[in-house]
Length: 249
Image (cartoon, rainbow, N blue to C red; front, top):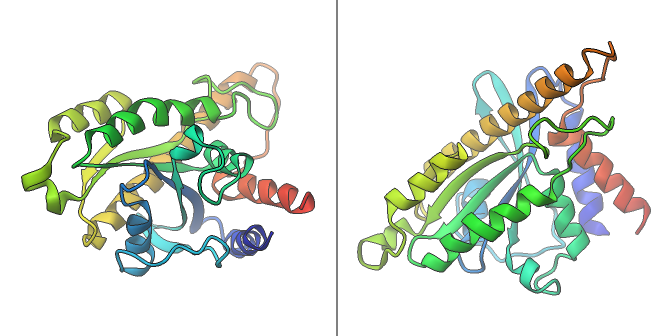
């Protein structure tokens, strides 16, 4: 598949950099149809709020600075409608699940003017992410939290329409995000600086999630004296996923 080959090349190029100063993450922008996933992604990558989505085109990434570490973000927008209709859109169910399973971070997107989009992403959508994650690492050690942790933020879109059309109260969304221990934002499609700040937050929470999983694994293996090599799921695991998929196509 051309798209898989393109992503492989990008990942290898990013992973070839000095890992002491550079990190990389796949970030899934996840939400119902019409909430602005493509606009959000295009504004982050190109500074434009919409470009025609071409699934076979070269996948793109963007470097952001997080503290003293350069983070390479590969955003991918996926629709929750795949779960209701596996034939919806361009993603096969297996390919879709691969991203959900291995992504380092997630942007949970909903439309401020459509309460149903908030209700779905904060219930069935979020639960699907949790249930899709691995329960053991590649060495067979169970994750301390039950499943592999992930970075996450909750984002309400179409803030520019909120004055007259708001259906999702800000306090309600903030409360839900707080119960999950994640950050919350509201943005409109023109706020590139705000979207960049969101991606910084995703990178930070993804790194924290990986760190906590590693700490749990270290505690679990301490009694045996086993030494596990360190791997970053942000890049290496996803590279392996695409290499394996490429061999089967």
